[in-house]
Length: 137
Image (tube, rainbow, N blue to C red):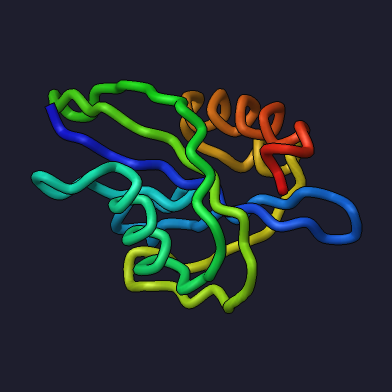
């Protein structure tokens, strides 16, 4: 089993929560997703989430531990996934070679853009969680 992290960066713009989605290059599927990446051996999932977020976007902020997990199979490999949110404080999105575009979306647009159904489920759960002012602060 392999271990993966999924990170949904979000910001508040005009009183509305927006989520950052990244579009993978065609050679890697060409679909929209949040920040994602593998957890290294002996690396805590929280550290992997911060590392992947920094590598893929260069945004600063605060990691929000959601407690959400999931699992899926991909080409015969079973993956365990820990899910986080990232409250963006600043910085600019700087895409690496595996992504060709990014977009900030409200919940409905982000939900429709996401390719994987499990990503959609996690996004909806995170949005409900962040609606609690104590979680989003």
